[in-house]
Length: 150
Image (cartoon, rainbow, N blue to C red; front, top):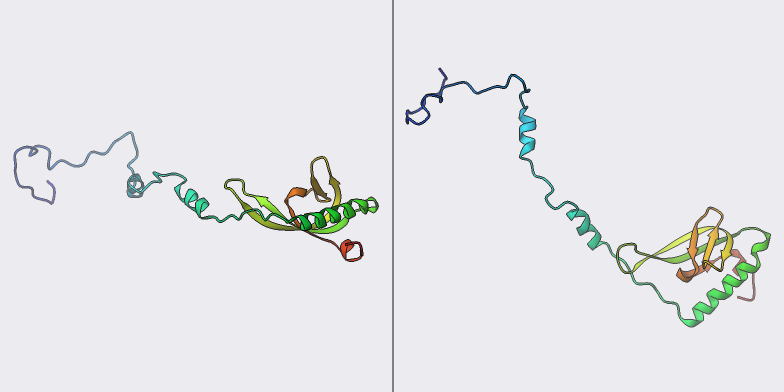
């Protein structure tokens, strides 16, 4: 009989002292696996990611005044005129719209300008990077400092 003594209540007296059943066809589940059945689960899948996304800050697009827009257009024309002899090193500050929320962020890119696509409205760099001209906030190049027109 077992090491425990049970008070006789009558209802389960016939089976209370029997050994625990062990299946002959299925392996015994380890305590680790048994505990895993009762571990917490992600009832709200994606909840943490949604909270992070909500807390991520975005800014509004900075609109250029008329004078700054004209100055930028002059720089683009100057770049376009001087592209015939090869690429031009250029640094661009531009607005990147957020894919999920209103607003976006300001980014900077430096590379060698390959061409200006007026139809698509993009600057195309030698490494394949493309920046929309309507997103540009600033342009900087050695070409501008050596030109008295700007």
